[in-house]
Image (cartoon, rainbow, N blue to C red; front, side):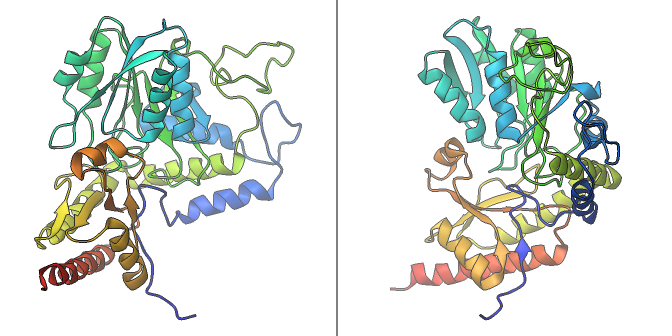
Length: 390
């Protein structure tokens, strides 16, 4: 079989690749020695990866205390736990707010709760720049509004919400606020000591350079969310009830030790670079891509000023799946096509047809950006010729 072109991996908003060598080595070491978990073994040969990961993320997010960082399977798992747990004490039919920018990890749990008659859901539209204004949030709040859940950063438009101002508005009205940081963690600086959010969700396998199967959330007030999972924690085992202490209140069962070893190494790697440096490089490379793509009149870029390294576009006269196929097979550019699990965004920007998404990471090179821009422009020019021909 003939070899194709070298891979240019631009699907980092889904899962980052490559992983730093430190992450791969951490996984190897975690599997080379017996698992060490407090309360679950008499051995002491292994590292306490759970504590290492908790402390690394607490430092990266400026989230105190570290025990309020809870580990789950991924961001979707975290959002389900927080949504269900924060609404546990609400009367049937209480109001919940979200936005048309959100991912199905938010939209599906909320729509299911609405179908069950447990909540009334308000989905806020976004403005032309891909944000939801704090003023529109305040206008949507009613006396029975109990919760708002929204993406900190859009996985389609790369826009970032002003969760500081939105959080202030929500807290003025006593509304619990969950921010989904799946796209922002590791990409932009996060200071949870200063941000007025009640819970901040992260995933391990994107900007934090961990491996799939890890994620979690930071919870400011543990008593504000009821546990919805129960089981063994390795602590207070004589009690038949879930511990109230953090993080055992929300962590039951055996942890993903290799995953948390990777997450600790990934978070420390990001910290060693500096999130500000990551963001500055991403901003420069993303601006270059958009500037080049805009030179082709039949290329539509859906957000020309993203705050995250995400570029969503379509080529006139071509299906986005076809563009993605050509990019991968002819040029080695790995992107993502379709609806990106965010159907309401696409309903607003492209009539629900989906888009091609290029998403960068710290490991993306300037040369890869140049080659990708050239590839998209060549495809666009060929499409333009086909459309214009009799």
